[in-house]
Image 1 (cartoon, helix red, strand yellow):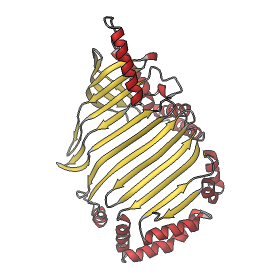
Image 2 (tube, rainbow, N blue to C red; image 1 turned 30 degrees about the vertical axis):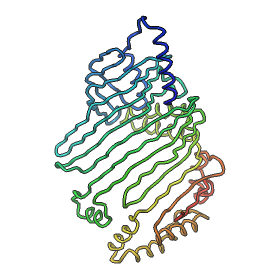
Image 3 (cartoon, one colour; image 1 turned 90 degrees about the vertical axis):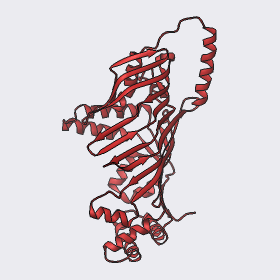
Image 4 (cartoon, rainbow, N blue to C red; image 1 turned 90 degrees about the horizontal axis):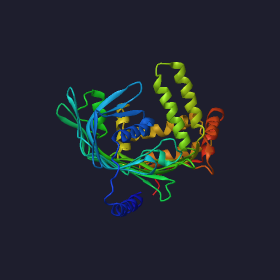
Length: 399
């Protein structure tokens, strides 16, 4: 994406030299706002501005509000938004170099919420949303937020140092890759007043929670293959939970059908019959997808032992006795789950993890993609066959 933009800028510079002295058409601020809203309609929201000012290639949306439409419609005042270095491209699309958002300060009673350094960079607003490719979607190269703080009674109870996300098109613009991160997450739970919750927080050592989140993946609209390569929540002295999956059939056409069904549901939220019909329609649309693979893994950083100690204390025993109790009850619980041949594998892995909490991983990797209707049919008719259908395996304490 960056290489593509750089090439275009060089070409634009050459064109400027060749055409110097000629007049350039001014940016149409109203058209730009209309196309932003057309692109964002799929997200069930609308951006409004009291007035629009165009200064060369900069567009200022003054007195803007964003309204998330739906049953719980709510508007947020954004103030003045400056869209820097706006250029119009072939087909009526717009490229915005950077959108700066004003600092957010919200106070309600004893609580306050503050966000700084908000911006979008490399924003592309489609000329039309009627197409089937990525060119019909509004995209950005980078979304960024600086420090986020939440205070209660003057005390900081939650904070984030920085959050950012990037998207990039492949050279042939057939696929989209994305990645993001949230760093410096801090939650102070010492102000929790409920006695039982406070006791659990203290026993588990969760008075202050620190961590970060990361995500990465890619999407190919033509084949409908979406691959979430990694989604990880990592918290100090707790553990790291990682998720990945791959699905096919998530095409642009399906995305637009799902969006249209969602808008139908939001348009008449009090009509129960219409809601049920739309829900069935959405369920039917989801059946166009197929399952390719998935994995969920937890790497312990001390929370398991503290959890067993706390649970044991609640039962009038200790952590070691609670661990043995869990291991004894596990076969009964697994029998009820109807896991078939997978039952012994799960039991061995969980027992190993309880004895020595390091990591526990569940993997599903069938030989070929499995259509969602086949999975649902197996779950209803023969649930014990699902693990084999999806190629499920469970391991513990792998190096």
